[in-house]
Length: 345
Image (cartoon, rainbow, N blue to C red; front, side):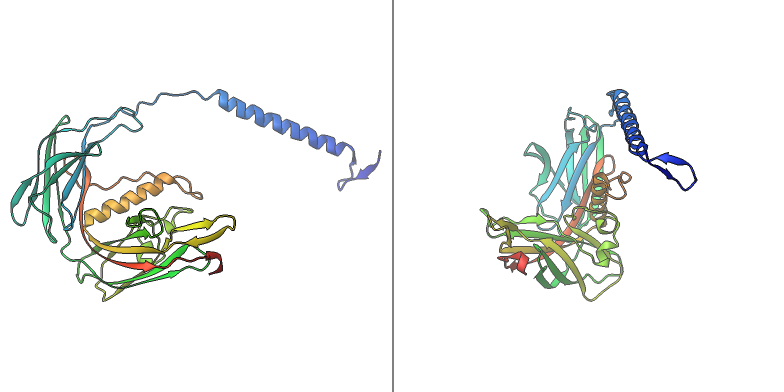
């Protein structure tokens, strides 16, 4: 057996070193197995009553705008993860009042896709109108009231440019508009609709997720670009302007409809139309949408920072839960050519 002097002068047989290392590995493996099995054996299913402290309440939601009739969704709040669905409250009365004209209209209950809506055909909301919704129910007994003002102006779109991003199915857009001139904060929402011209139903427009790296967008708290990794792009971009500007330009990106050619793995995109819609929204609308996005991202978690603190979604309904917001809009549509081979361009 060969003997080698170590640095400290103690002689150790070289052939014993592999045996000692293997023994340590076996001990570590045994400890880990025992640890995992002991953890598993101590885990028992525990019943958790999430209905403790639950308070039944009526929930309403509606977005008023001059281009559609009044439609208010009415539901009941539910116990989290419960299989027993709470029935919708019984309606005693439901009205909407035009505050400016001092006229009140009845909201008529209608069932659509097993959901209860309150609607009226007696009038249509107007720009600048102030509307108050009042609903009285029983089981549970409640009186819900909420008021919101539809913005009185829409913006003017002056330019929309679309450019494909090299070797990607994404497109980059430059969008310019003349904002509302005001000394107050004005709230906006940018929405993109896409129409695939090579599908079975080419006439259908579908809302498309979009993203932007512009400071005007990323400064808003809801935007995931600066706080999350691998986050899904939001379905719209919300922002505010607190100073009057002559022209505002926003750059954003979206994914074009695409496919892979069979056998060749060649990626190509389809001809499509995009409709860019810019909404001037009420403060209630803005607060609700941004808090909703923040809640969704908090629930999704983050690869780097883990789960975020829960976020409460904004509501403005007195006597119940939910939100009533409003907006007016303008839009523009352009045709975008497909690309036969994305990898080469």
